Amino acid sequence: MVNYPIGIQTFSEIRNNDFLYIDKTKYIYEITHPGKYVFLSRPRRFGKSLLTSTFDAYFSGRKDLFKGLAIEKLEKDWTEYPVLHFTLAMAKMGTVEDLFNQINNQLARMERMYGVERDGDDITTRFYNLVTNLYGKTSKQVVVLIDEYDAPLLTVLHDPERLEKMRTALQSFYSPLKDLDPYLRFVFITGITKFSQLSIFSQLNNLNNISMLPQYAAMCGITIKELEDNFQEGIGVLAEKYHYSHQQVIDKLLYHYDGYHFSEDSEGVLNPFSLLSAMNNRKFNNYWFSTGTPTFLVNMLKHFHTDITELDGSEAWAADFDAPTEDMQSVLPLFYQSGYITIKHYDPLTQIYTLGYPNEEVKVGLMRILIPYYAHAKAADAAKVTSRMYLALLKDDMDGCLKAMREFFTTIPYQENTLKDAPTTEGHFTAMLYVMFSLLNVYVFSQVRNAKGRLDILIETDTTIYVMELKLDGDLDKALRQIDEKDYTIPYQSDGRKVVKVAINFSTEERTIKEWKIEK
Image (tube, rainbow, N blue to C red):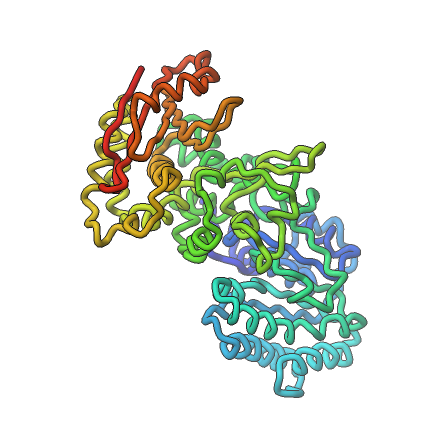
């Protein structure tokens, strides 16, 4: 039986205990020859910590751990260097004091490990002296690895005053790196977001950000080839359990967990944590969101007044979404770097990227988080109503689907309904429907453009395409006429599925769906 390394982020533990390891060691060699200062951002639970641990083992000269892997044929020397491996994952209390405690504790551990006396009290002095003393003691340059450098910053991202203090504190830790250049063999820094090098790594003007370089796009994550080469047993188990063919299992895995692209025209990769969890649990499920609720994302959506219906399919230049997080003018940088949207297409002529949700797991998980913002509904309550909506859609019963949704909204007490404070706009109610329909196992699109206008919501099932126009305290017949006048159904007439027009009217007073008309 295959041992899947769920939650194991230490390379030596994976190799010594015969856990499945997807060989990424060719990237280790390529990056370090002749790389020196390297930065990589990737979403959470995407293998950054394991990659950092692999660098640790490599520079520690642990040739035994790399037997049979790609780097064994590439590396000839296997020189052992002193390695300073930091992680800021636990510094999430949002205070400078907690950050300094975390760093000081790690410095103390490394001083003990290498037999170096503590020299100084502040982290800047201790870090500088630890590196120089190690160089003097071993006559070898030092390797510095910093994992999850941005964890303390993300905790206070919503608070500009605390963010500035945290940024200044981190800068005091990183500031010795430039002066230590003669004593350093390699520096690797990783995290989720891309904070400005000018404000955080002000001295490291030669820090190489490889996050969007195509040659490293598959360094974290699992490619389709790696899926087929390494997961045959797990695919077989899922095929037997669900009575699927081999290809049906692969297609479902790709539908749920694939679709991440970290540069233009790059190969897509699957989320490693979700894939490994599905294999280990022998079950398709949404695993990525179970590891943490990103409440700061909702705060950022509110802060930038984001129209959630326009996030999927948004267009931008690289500077708009691969931008410093603290200087962002929209949610795109945070959502892209955190893995909630990804690159879907790139136009080399205009240099414009099209962004969208990578897969079903991310889209459904995000919508579940957004339910309280749009309808103050608990996840369990939403799950019940979406089950009824889904069963209705399976029967091509849009009428029953909308009845279930309306009943759901009317059962929410007004004093508990966040919609009482929400803007009474058609856009807000469109977003509310978009969120609810996105929880179903159907394709949902919003603000679909054609030459004459923008369709509010398009829903595609296996048998039917629903073209939906929404009105606020409006006229249903007018909404249906608008669908015809703007030719919203024409692109789907040759599809082969039934095309159904749906007009929905919301009530600002009742804060719910008032009525609807369906034309087949």
